[in-house]
Each structure stands twice: as C-alpha cells, then as structure tokens.
Image (tube, rainbow, N blue to C red):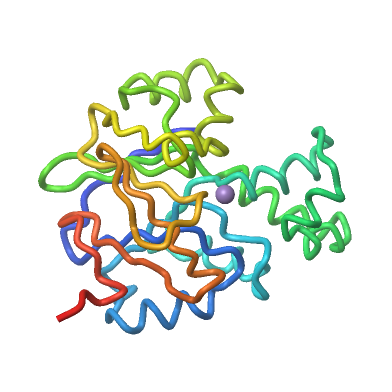
Length: 231
Ligand SMILES: [Mn+2]
C-alpha cells in the first residue's frame, strides 16, 4: 500500500474527520449517531491512533474493513508494527502507552493488526469542491504538501515520517505557518481542549478517548458538527 493516498471527492454524502480514537469505538459510534452519520453515503476519515488506552482496540480491524472508513497511520499503529517486526521498541514504554492489549496477544493474532496497519498511508488527501484537504497524524515536515507527497512516495525518509507521526512542535511553539497546496491539514496526536487551528493546520484530538468528547469536522465545509455549536 502506498504511503500517500488520494481519495476522490464524495459526491453522494458527507466526509467527516475525527481525531485520535484510542480504542473508544463505542463512544465514537455514539458521536456518529448523534450527527446522523449514514454509512451508505457518508465517509469517516481518521487521523490515526485507532488503538491503545481504550477498551475496544481490537475493533480497529472491523472498522478498517468498512468501505466508508479511512485512516492514516498514527504513532500507535507504528508502535504495533515496530513491536511485531523487530524494530527498536521498549515494551515497558509501549505497555505504559496503552499497548498491553497488543503485547498480550499471541503472535499469530497480532499479525492481522500489523498487516492492516501497514496498509495505512502516512498521509492522505481528500478532494473537495474547494480544493484538497490533507490528513496525517502529527505534523507536516514540509511547508508544502507536494513536497511531502514526493518525499513519502519516493524517499521514504525516516526523519520525515517521524515528524508526520510524532511531532508536537507546532502546538508547543504556536507555529502558524500554513502548509501550502492544501486548503487545510487535519491532524491529531496532541490532545487539545478545543479544536485548535494554527495556520491551516486543524488539531482535532479533543480527547474523545479520555473525556468522551470527539470532535467531528465536516471536511468539505470545515465546519464542526460535534460537539454541536452553542446556540
Ligand atoms: Mn498519537
């Protein structure tokens, strides 16, 4: 599977984006129900970190099998891959980060997860009527989307990938230079109290997995559907 994926516009229904899920698929489903998500026509895009911490991490496989569900690979998916593929990974750290459910699976039961996670792109681009919207887990290593696409497709530079999945720099420094070539870049990874936009980078992880408040963003209009705006 390609490390960069392009998805054509949804002409039948809505495209929604959600922040880190971390094993809370039941809460996410409730949130989707509350905005009338219709899997026949609507699609859901995840910025990664589907697993670890919450009670339903194994459900990630069923969600990833749905034709209406798209995701990029977060650092937690990357941890599972590293563990199973013999990468350098401290199991104590991994367990503390919520990976116990995975560490405790027999190797043959880890395998379907690893294969599904390996299939996830590092960055994804969704077409909308007003131009492309990008998604990745943490931050873009480049100020230009085309450069990121080229890097992911041709260089596979581990340092660039590391920024895509692990960087917290933009939020930490309040860095607000936009990423050129996309209308908006949707990310998660660092929990924020309220959805926060820096430049054109939208931080969607409002801690749905800890506080129960998932933010759902309509990708075409860039309007927040959940939590409902105060009237
Ligand atoms: Mn993360």
